[in-house]
Length: 547
Ligand SMILES: [Zn+2]
Image (cartoon, rainbow, N blue to C red):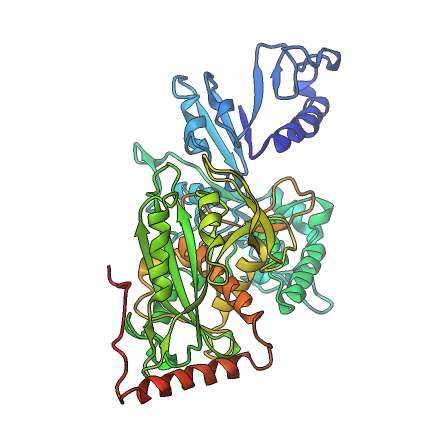
């Protein structure tokens, strides 16, 4: 049984690789039934019965269907990093169960690691981690080919420098080197994750990359050119080519040094950095904040996730510098108006800035893309200009926030309200890319995002879970933002909506003077509240952050 990421991969693999293999390998010729029999039960695209009694079936990892009621001796997984989550569970486990009753079973996993600790990378680490050692044609020293040793510039570009004698080696020597090469485990690797059986590794794993390939496209000079192009793209801010190079040429997971810090460890370090205005207490709104917006994720509709609203509040100042102000959940069924009504209290809450000025949320965006769509729309209909329904737009090239689209409201047992409310599409790719750009900024000032104590570890873990994953079915390697299986993204979704809401608020102002106007407004309010009998009105905090 061979498992491919999606149906299309499975079919192409059958039509191209399998057919070629049986045609070109002398020992396999004649085993595959004649092509005229195709379409019958013995030789279909995805199931091939061989004339020697063998059987090959090719299944797609995108559905659990292919894993049912089968017994297979050898199960082969291709590109497991690209498998999507399915209800039935982990495909590798499902597939291995198919061979559980055979005495001579074997599981083979082959793939390109995409990001650290994805399925391919994990299985490599579970094994004994062998690398291929080749002898230097000059001094004979055995070594693993490493990209660092490749000359990348000048007339020696594409030549390999021996790490022992430092002589240069040309690509033409590769075949000789490989013929004298062998597999071994480097010393000093962490093998603590290995699964052992009788003291020996139960999982064998080997790493290989393009420099070992005889394929003309992998000639060392070509690899260097590809690298130079990726470097050039990266200077322009586009990291996709460099990720492709790391994933497909070097065969290693990709995470650039900054993206690697957008996890809970990296971000909580930022939260502690009081020197650049982070780490403020949970009930403090820093003075730089001139406007507040909210983003609300709607959860429910079965599954493990409890029914609730997840609310994130961000404060924004000049140059869209951002301060995280609050993150909390409202328990209850979002289909019930009582649950949504609690958001009114959130909007009415007066948030006190450090200097005493009081701020209220200018606008909130609520996700109407999943659960309780029509209840959310109906609720927003009577709160125009305060709460707006937003929906993620997956298609490529969509703006961060689009024009409002009049949408129907179709609540259960009620008549349809045609074009009852404006819904705002939020570009999925664009807004994630934007958030990443913001989080990559490490110097406070315009565009920087601050975190105080209200940003819990859980919040920070959910803020940027997305990884660049190869797009399935795309001929040339393209990447898109994807959420790894099992990770949560509510904090990130709410933040993207809160930022989209800021963009809608900005449409009410002239871009050039928006921050001046907001500042004057807040100052006037602050003075007038002081002027009223010389004392400020009591602070009304309807919504308690700590609850
Ligand atoms: Zn040497």
